[in-house]
Image 1 (cartoon, helix red, strand yellow):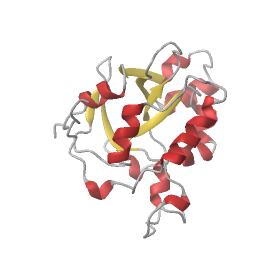
Image 2 (image 1 turned 120 degrees about the horizontal axis):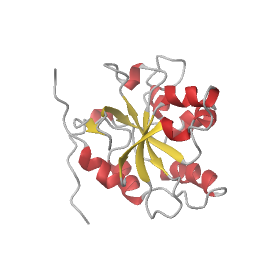
Image 3 (image 1 turned 120 degrees about the vertical axis):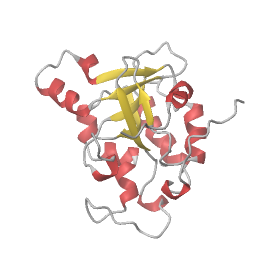
Image 4 (image 1 turned 60 degrees about the vertical axis):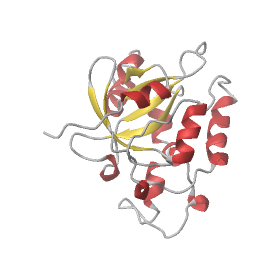
Length: 198
């Protein structure tokens, strides 16, 4: 097994232990209609050690050279799996760790209507200078399962505003909502580096 990359995580940003049951339930729901959509093993291993964390190495470039900054890795939590104490969200009367929970993001219905069913998000991105924890809406880094012949999913950046525009104005241009980043999750992690302060 390859040595794990040191991304400089702050352990205070972790959301608690990964409940693998929630992750498997989420993927199983997609697997029924799309059998090739399975969780990436390297991703599960990474999430098991750094669940919902914020790395120090946050910056990367897409295949086209677009600069991006990762805010945090998303998590798999629900109300029952959260360890106390409650950390109130600025958005409402729930724990803020649920704001970055993949099942909760999809459970709201907003992503189901905007995001291609073959995209599974795993990280949130900065919105300009703003950390995604401070925002209701943000772009995401996703696994891309559109190519059923691949052994492992590719990695793309999904653009929320472009998805909205495509849904309402240009429904035939699905590729406009995503930009290629890496061949797989391991290659994505290698792209992450510390951001240059301006």
